[in-house]
Image (cartoon, one colour):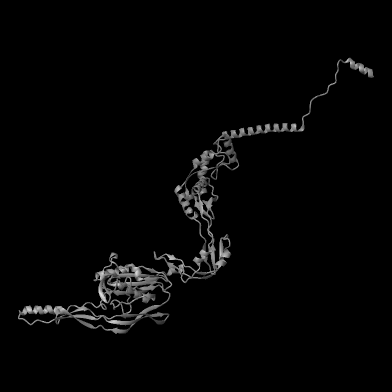
Length: 581
């Protein structure tokens, strides 16, 4: 068997046994091959999908699905259908809507109707149709896909009223654009409340204007937060607040510049500054309550607003001779300077300060005045009549007189003890408003009278009258002096006599049915002697003369001997008064 076997092999020519040399692929190589095939497949799918999308983008005839014009859905519509939808829905969507701005810690509404002029429906539809149809093919497909998922919003072709928007933003900016606000304080019932300061607020008005314009076009009425720049918040200065707050209560007053504006009251406050400093600490809170003693003022702004100048406190008048033109001119100028003057509670009136210097440059004219015991002509003669008439009113209004002098001699236009002499650089007339309310002086020279009226607010039924008692009377003497230029039997009066007095004037005050008497002043008026000059020339021996000529000469001598007497300063309403320069 073996040999046969050998022989059999030999019989086959050159038979050689062979093995396969092919190597099997490794596992990682099989993975790379699969990934490559997958990439090729996906790329093909992407290209196919992109081709489909580009084709759809090119061939779709209407507005792409999902597109809105503002907030109006117009996807799938033709431009004409979209214009109709916009025209039908636009007005209703804008009605009663507003763009809300949030600026720092406040919000502001701008009604759309106040800044919207019109909406072009056809152009708005064109804007919607253009979504996905501008730019390169990739940009077009991208915008189209965004529209599919609700991100395709076209602007309405809205015309914004520029002037209306500028006005609205101007009003907002006037309030919202602020400089830093200093800390403030207010008095509570038993505490001092301190409010922390606020930073200054600034923003880009142009950027806000553009944002609002866009929101209107997109019908986007969600609140818009304005980007702001804040300056540093002022720190609380407790020492400064203490200087302002601590003090006695101050009632509300009136602004004397216009006589109507009420200036608010201020409570009286006392508190421990160091305790307040500890409570405030680092000043990071918005408000602090400091224990304090608080006293409210007598008159509040609300009270004063109702009662300001509602009552006549006193009204007095004196007579004057308007025929004395220079003196009347001076009286009128002084009255005009006083008229309308307001004294808030506690304020003092000075006649000289209010009327000012009586000079020719200021319109005053020379008129009779008492000076150094004589009657002289001086600029401003007569201005004591307004001061005296005012003094009479002040007595009857029961205001506090702080400075007053009587004339050196009596005057004819006031009762004894009720005059008040003034002189620039010398005697003044002053009084203080000792009531709880403002007082106004009304001064007028008219119709032969000097009238003074004090108006204010009565707080009771008080009335005031005056009474003057004469303590002494000083009768003038007649003093004769010789005049060598006149004949014996002839005379002339050089100075009229004035009776002097010592008086006391009282205010009789009646209130709540009770009458009390208070000394107002003590006055001393000097007497002034009458001075008469008499002639000393001896008469010549009689000569024969024509009887008619002698009678004429006798008449002339009699006229020279009895001149008309000068007016008595104590009785004549136009008598001069003391007005020393």
